[in-house]
Image 1: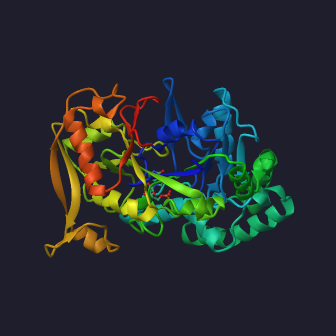
Image 2: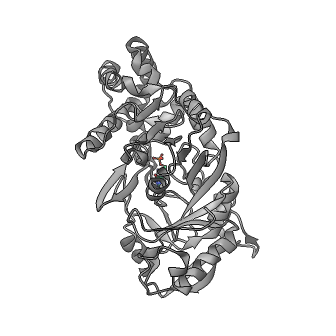
Image 3: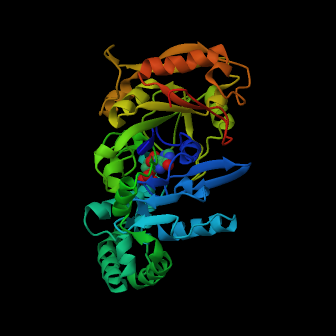
Length: 429
Ligand code: IMP
């Protein structure tokens, strides 16, 4: 198995947590490589619901090690609260089980304040960020004024870096956005305390992962968000500030590309998106409400209702190309049960009549396109107990076949209910 990457092929919220949890049983360690606590992975284990924002969901398996790579950005306060919530429920977050990169960047209060202030100032044109400080933290990283986890271990360095990072941003927030910030000394005191708590976790993750691979271990790389929220390849500017494409696992964990052989693309059986930005197959009708209510499509991080629509294979095809996806994991198929008719978007009709089979970089062109649909009859049968492809109703199989036909990649996994064991594993896996 060696290194497997799991990525969302739409706009995030594809139900990654459950597949990652299933695959975790076959690996020694789980690695996160990008994003921060803008992510939210929901898991249902023995009727207990877990929502994790930063720690890989592999933490629920006591014999596995979890890694947070250098490409992730960390709000230490959120991380420490996540420890407490897991510990209360009997899950160990001991440092031997969770290794955090010394090169990962740290979210500071001014990142969150700036994220909120900018979104408020944009009004109608807001990106709809999670307001967790994600963009501003990656900005500071690229501007080379960021604070890294290693800095939390060196109080004097930390003090100087926080003061440097905050000087310009405090001015901007106060003068331009009329938003006050705590003093850099107050921030330093809080973060030095976080550093004291996190010291035993902070390590050279790239080195440890390299050693794990040398020792023959199998690793699972858990992407966050979805490929169409990618800073380079998504629907810019309605994107996140990291790279959720599979290739980012190399940079965000500190490993070479030769280790990665299997890339699993998660595909929700329909489409959702939170925040602004193009979404051609979006529904504003009873079918959209059905998907939202039956699929419980409310953000696990922000609680916002998600925008819902038909499955869009243009989006999936593009994700396959951008990430080298080798098999698909279909999630939430059971949500479609009971809808009399299902539509699959197969291409976009341009204003000039031409057909697009991939997304254009131009938001103008995208806004002038209309989706081209194929219609499929739905199914009424309960599929939640299906454990083999042959158990699925004929109409359901036809829907799945249409997806693979339009996307050109085989199915690897089909999830038929939120329960941990309710997944059909296709034979070739
Ligand atoms: P940010 O990542 O908070 O800056 O938000 C940028 C965009 O990405 C917004 O549209 C968010 O709703 C979206 N986003 C960020 N993280 C997630 C996620 O985990 N699932 C779905 N959408 C996300």
